[in-house]
Length: 77
Image (cartoon, rainbow, N blue to C red; front, side, top):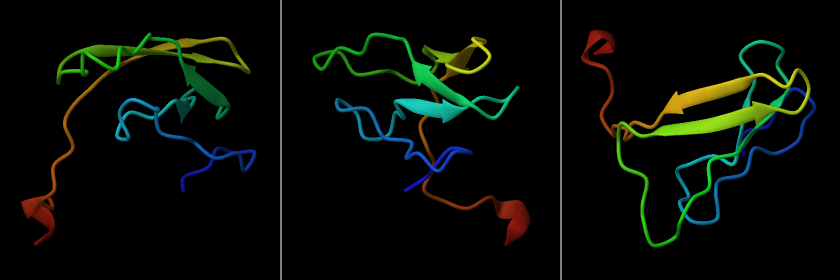
């Protein structure tokens, strides 16, 4: 399981196991928590923005959701 700089687990969202409930803040390395309300009946589509707020520096981060690809980058073959 992925952890933040304090060793706390970065847990997936309860509605979608691929969408993390928290991320590492790009500015300070703290924990940025998901503030976008997720609806169990309406899945997040690729291209939608997910908002996160850092609990340390209070920065807001809007992350564009993209589907993960199962193949490796051909540049490294």
